[in-house]
Length: 255
Image 1 (cartoon, rainbow, N blue to C red):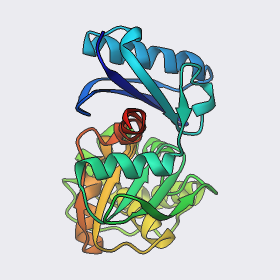
Image 2: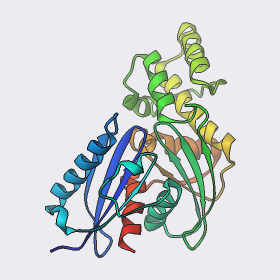
Image 3: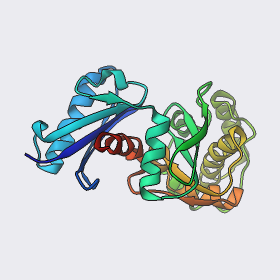
Image 4: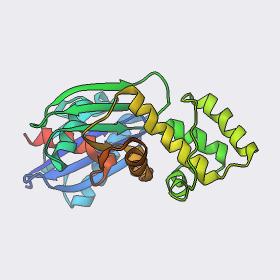
């Protein structure tokens, strides 16, 4: 029997699973839209991770669940907060003092991590979709482009456009005005990503080493350049940033 440890992150948009071995090396992962049946999503993610590792459920020594829907993980042996799991997963890749910025589908978090890997403080945006993946999904519709194309478009921008509204509804109205004015879609796309970064910085001033995690940076890689260009930050992005919370949970399972 193998010695494997599983972490499951049940987010509002997607559920992720990471399987690691006894040397804390990722050997399998799985991802599904969370949908309305969270228990099913967790089972499917576990099955996908096991298949990728060529392993069986019996090989899992311990499983830890995190995320808003962690209570739905029936096979979990324990639970940890999203804050602690994102801090642990980011520290695994970049040991040292840092600020983790996790931008997800429905919320965003700023987590201060000390030199020894402990999370020292955090701020979370829960009041509206501004600065989240939902904001980009909704506003991309106004540009008639798939949201996953925003980053590619923004990278071709030649003009910085500042969107004054953080609210999704008001931003949509503002976009219509920019379209009517003849602004290029590439420049508007950059403005949208820049507004996400600005919303984060407004929530919590950033300094030092910043590590971006979550689904938004996974699908919008140009956001890293925007944090660096617009806010003068040193920004790092770990491999598979969407899975960092699940990786952190798996590392706790292996303790």
